[in-house]
Amino acid sequence: MMNQFRILFRQTLKAEFADRERVISPILFAMVILVVVAFTFGEPAPELRPAAFVAQVFLSLLLATQTALARAFDPEHQDRAFDLLRAAPVSPGAIFLAKLTVVLMQGATILVPSIAISALFCGVSLPPDRLFAFTGLCLLTVAGLGSLGVTLAAMTLKAHARTVLFPLLFFPLSTPLLLAGTQGGAAIVAPETMVAAATMISGWVTVSMSANVIFLTLGILLFGELVKSD
Amino acid sequence: MPRNLKLTGIAIWTCLLAVWGAALAVVPPDQNQGEVYRIIYLHVPSAIAAFAASLFLALAGGAALWTRNEKFLTWQRALAETGLLMTGLALLTGSIWGKPTWGTWWTWDARLTTTFLLAILLAGYLMLHSALPAGRQRLAVCSGLSIFIFADVPIIYKSVTWWRTLHQPPTIIRSGGSTMAPEMLTVLISGIVAMVLMMFWLAWLRTGSIELNRELESQTGAALT
Amino acid sequence: MPGELIHLRGPNGAGKSTLLRICAGLLDPQKGEVDCASEQFEYLPAEANGFHLKLGACQNLHFWHELRSGKKVSVDTLQKSLAEWKLDHPIIAGNFALPVAKFSTGMKRRLALARLVVNGTPLWLLDEPVSGLDEDAVATFISTLRRHLENGGAAVIVSHDTRIFSGITTQLLDIIS
Image 1 (cartoon, helix red, strand yellow):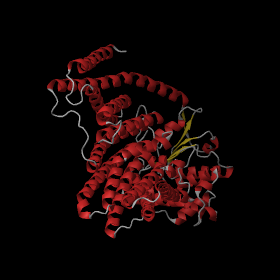
Image 2 (cartoon, each protein chain N blue to C red):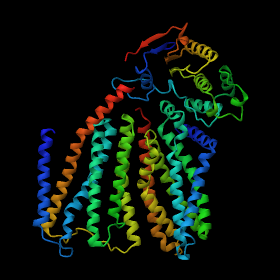
Image 3 (tube, chains in turn green, blue, yellow):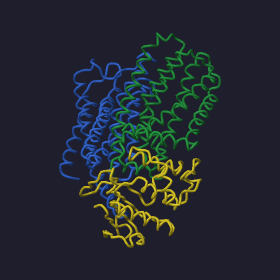
Image 4 (spheres, one colour):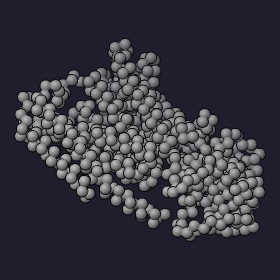
């Protein structure tokens, strides 16, 4: 299983990098959203800046990962490599985790410029410990969105109108992750002391973690079912 | 319509109408809210029936994955449809009730938000069900989604509750509570029971036509491949 | 079963491809059971080849071999079978490989058949393996099929092209719609 994971991961990563449009377009999309948000809100008042920063990061993160996730299995779908994988002696868990790992890497490449540019636009400068905590929470959100999205992408692979179906299911299911991310993020970024916000932050991290655990477990279990014979 | 389906239908409709009659005529008005509160006898039962539908949807999902029997998928579809109807009813009555008592049609209260998201998810479930070709794959996908929805609803509720209570003083008027008069409680509980039974009955009613539809699907499918 | 070749035959829409998909474990039979471990067979559908289209020929063959066997395939074996299928042009087999998406239909098919040889799976389940191939490639397929059967391999083939069965002992399986 580990060996299969390694081989699948390498191939998935290679396929992703061979198609530059797939890597770059979600990042560009995230940047466009940031600019549009900046246009609509203009210069936020000083006391609103932290909230605006968090809102921008999560908005661009959510929409950009959604576009990336909705087509997560396209490289395998094109020449029916997915069918051959299903027929081959490969563990479904390995396929799922390989795809998830690549998706998480992609999420991180969207996240880093989003945080940097939003901070620039909103004029927010975070001390290292807060920046570190905020990035960690964002990564936790990305991880949850990833396991949810990869499962849904596999589910909707054979459905027609999947461009509509995917977000319709993805957005409501991701509510706990988003609330945990935005609320926990706002608590981290807000200019109170970290100690005062600590209980709130840890509460939201727990919510995010439990969503992560549920999505990952269900994802691995259900993916096995999806890969089985028709 | 099969005989036993018809008989249970008549029985459940009678119960429900009796409860509504009692709610409108027998039960005294509320001390604070007056007559308006009577909508509770429609609102709370339909909301509970909606969440019961999502519970049984997931149970049918688990059973479908376990046995690979198409019958459970038919039940899932029927339960999702009636569940959507119930969430719609709950949201509508909640809105109508919210206007005179809270002064607003909509607020991001935890229960409202969760019911709203459940409605979207059930609609998404139904769309996915119709968008997939019949077969084992559809059975697995839909059953998987039903379990996903059910597992997510509690943490959606939990996170929305947190979100609101942390940022807003708890001004929201809680419905029900221990102050309720015994006769009100009796009518409300029988209303809930009748509504949940009605939800099941409607789902049962739907399974027949879904089954027919599926048979038609597989017949034409066999002719094409 | 070793050395055996089965030709699945029948009119369009009789269910030949469906039967092959059932054998490959992609579809569940309505009745009966299929007893075949996925290590033992390799399936090739009619209308697709199962490649990562943005990657090159060698990257694809390496991947499938390593995934099935857990071992890396030697460069020699790879180059030899690419040469056998006339795919040894530096643009295809070299370091800066052309993505499979740019291949012609016949070239993709040849690459898929080369993958069968490289993987060396005992049972081949092939759906129209020679559609879109030129005379030369069909001849190569016939000789590789022979070699496969002589080495104790087996194959189930759906094909309307009877050339590939000439001179080989074949079991016919007619499917009536």
